[in-house]
Figure 1 (spheres, rainbow, N blue to C red):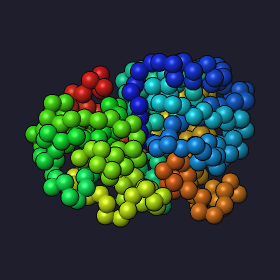
Figure 2: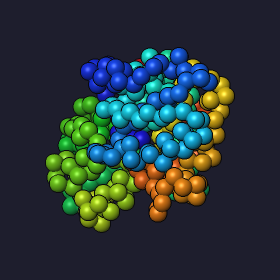
Figure 3: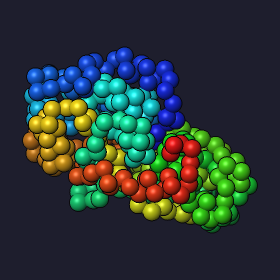
Figure 4: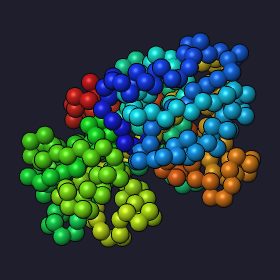
Length: 304
């Protein structure tokens, strides 16, 4: 999903690499295990449970054991998949583009959707409290502004492009604060720790309101980005082609609330992933060219 930490190779990456099992380069039709890795878009103590119906589906369709790996950041996933330790990875859109740029041999095949029939995309919001007097991005000058993380698509990259277009240099014209999560950014603005900030749309509109962490109307949205491609699931190119086809078909056609419920993988509302979404829809690598274009516009060092 949408919160991604700094793409640095550190202890988190090394820890993930140590615990992920055999490399994808060694995986073939006779292997009995696949590693699926993801990180939460907000603080989550039950990430594996959020994806369990999808994991069970993939296990049934492929006949493989699906081992789930909760990563601390996308640096770990990028390094893990590049090293062949992760077979299936749920990226953020920006981190996927970075992974490809850094030579990771994996391809996006499915993107997260929140509702049935929805497109695999979302938006970044610029938010503030109604009483701040901030009405547009141009009013951010000189203010404390909460971003999510320097490598967050909707929490930094698209906001940076928006600020630059409004004549605001995000490095020198505001006081940047990196909150670490979309939920943390929105809550910091609500509490007054930041004058304004950025978070993805459904975090502000729905998730924090439903959990009681925000009151309706507590935050105002003063800017909305262009549509950002949704979080992709990327499959290692080193896997057996027939296995890749099985995984791709399962993710695109069956990894959704209706199908998973009908086939006994879950009950009730059956919301999938840490965004409580409907499931996944088909995407390809070209779907993420918009991210590449924003990188070209911002020339952000994280894009390099």
